[in-house]
Length: 280
Image (cartoon, rainbow, N blue to C red; front, side, top):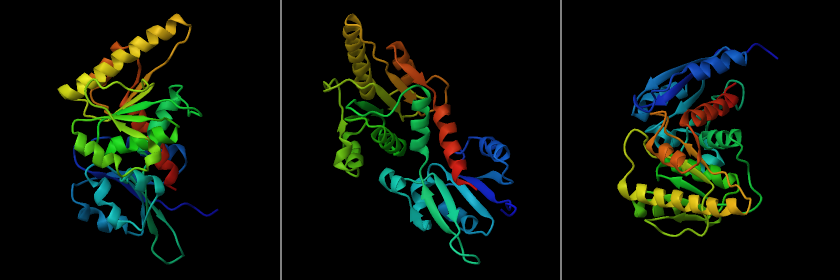
């Protein structure tokens, strides 16, 4: 094999959403013996990255809000999971022919970071039916639905602020995902064992959402108490995607109800590890 030429990588996105440090990717490059450099390009305008992603030494990029959708028309191909999720967070140039420009492929590794975090916590893919819940209805919620479906969870309940927005989101997924909207104190067919939080962690939970989530946690406690009498011990896990503060309001509610909680930094690192696996 010939010598690997240094390439430039970047994190695209706004100042707020791109507040994470490039240190993770640069450390992984060093550990894997790659001579690349990962920096940050803070912008909310996708036009600002057009020349960068087509430059000869472009090696790849991470994409954050608000560019995860805007970047898609600039790419040559979108992977299956990114199409289903409806967002790209990773760009990889793939050489087609020597002397010809590389094709830019868009991937989404957010869902892989979620699956990795859950598995590290002892949650594994299922062969039978077991339900899960996603709290929130934005782009991260879409990745969470994809992650839970890939692990075999069904039905996948969704709790959000605006039912019409949730319905619009659900309609873009295949019917086989078995996604159901939950409102108020609606009784669920099964109590979820896994939850993924995708709402902001630095503010109080919307009152109606909080009521629904609290009802779900209370019902889970009732079921677990009943199961304990027969010797069964269910383990319920919340993966929080927000990573500021270290303990979010949703994590506190889950912990108070006896759930195991996973902080968002674990999923952030997990998706970064998968990104670097694409960057060569």
